[in-house]
Length: 159
Image (tube, rainbow, N blue to C red):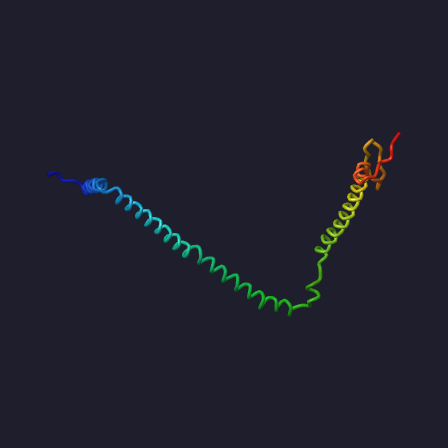
């Protein structure tokens, strides 16, 4: 009897199990495969949950605690020190570097508001001054002949 390596023995066992699997009932084989897939899915969920607990949630919790502690420190210590150190009116003064851009924006707002008003006036006079049905220019505020006909008023005949 020839000696064989352990690797050859495991191959022989695999071949034997393969013949066993193929000789099994197809329904039983399907159930085993389904069970294996369910176990694999369950283990993937467990691994992800453990990973999230170890890597995902812990840093988020730590950062949340740190931010809350900093927030409490700012409101309890820093603000009280800030208000006690100096004149509150001096703290509330606007710097010249901040006032200039604000004034510039305010001036630009008023200029654009006036320009919008002018464009709106031009738009309303253009709409109200248009040509009539026979090509005559109607004055602003004059009624268009077609609108007069809709209301039952006859337009004046043109010779």
